[in-house]
Length: 346
Image (cartoon, rainbow, N blue to C red; front, side, top):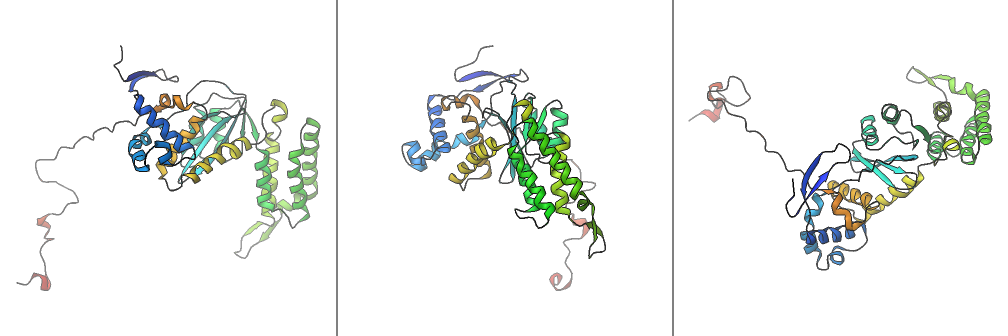
């Protein structure tokens, strides 16, 4: 079936479903282009629109209702970096390839298992995933990408240990454990990885008993005496037992999420600071356009923008003919309007 002027046929690359949507005309494309130049650049609204800021906002108000979508290519990547960033009350999960390409994103209330699964469902399983080991991601990986190797971000491992022990630990065991964590950055071959594992095992033989000591607290309950030391040891021990700290030696993948957290996420924060004061929905659209334009030329941006779905009319419930048998409305028969006391005197 053919299409009329001003419309185009669109077919989903995932499910194969097709639909017809209205294609922006030349004037609207120019408005969208000026809108995106202002949104992702440093020019003012008057400079981007060539007139006043009020006229620019009036002409481009419809652009806020477009929903950008990342093109689905089906490409299988050797390594995928994932991380989350907080934007207001929302959490944005981003998947980035090892070559620096934005693959997909997913909005959620937090880094839950369901949110990570929704992100993974948009991307073919890679050989390696690089993650900071946030909450919910382990179970999501077991369900969505069970055959994908895991690389824990070395920088986040070191930060997690430092958060528990501080930069200047009081105990000798804490200073030795933090030094072992910092030496993760100097591991570049298999021999150095084996040496690091032996150091971690030697620490356990010397100081492991401290992680089991218990103390009677003032509330009458027993707890671990050195609970922060125990937590720091657990961070390194779990990663070592799972074999997630040196995956890069076998697959050659990045060993940190810095290209994502220090690159894309930092640029998103800068974009939102430049446009501070926007509503949460406008911030979400701005971030989505920013991510899309990293992969799509601005001249083709209109091809990857979906119009808002038209609201469906709500069905009108038929009212019963007779009186209600039971509800919460007031009834004169309940004598609720009869006043007593001085208010009822004539």
